[in-house]
Length: 172
Image (tube, rainbow, N blue to C red; front, side, top):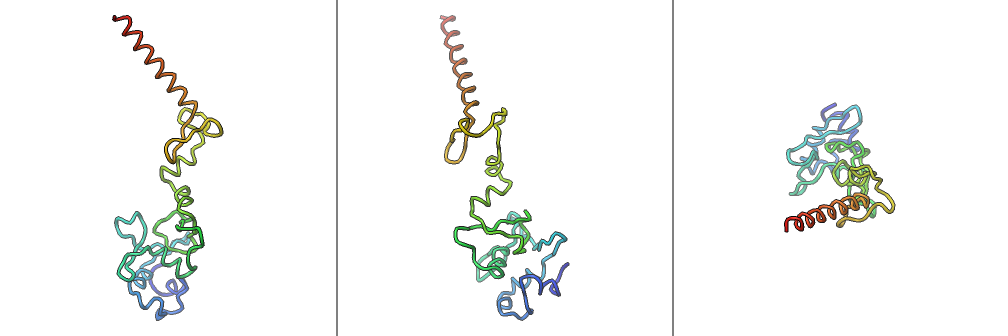
């Protein structure tokens, strides 16, 4: 579905095209008129390049994310302790407030598909050792290491060092 007709009044609770909240911002009216409603209920906006898939518009001299603006206008401000809006539909171009959930920045990162989230969901190291309990030690500020693998690496390093020492003694 495309255009301002019935979809426009359904989107964001617009009562009329002359509603003062919207009339003051032609960029917002234009963005709403360009929304495409999918079968899954996503309201897809036109994505500008370089936004990682998010829709932005100009609001009072600066660019704002359309999903954040529509959430604020329809639901209100973010609850205490939350900083991000998580797209439950996993579609960054979706601006439907029903598909957004306020969460902390950490929670939003862990729900995603980035390296940080993948590592946090990892239950076993690459050699198959379980990453839980006493088999895990912190690595750096956010990482973790498998203690069993550390022992394997240390034993191999000691063996290489011993072999080099013996080879040097044999050559002498």
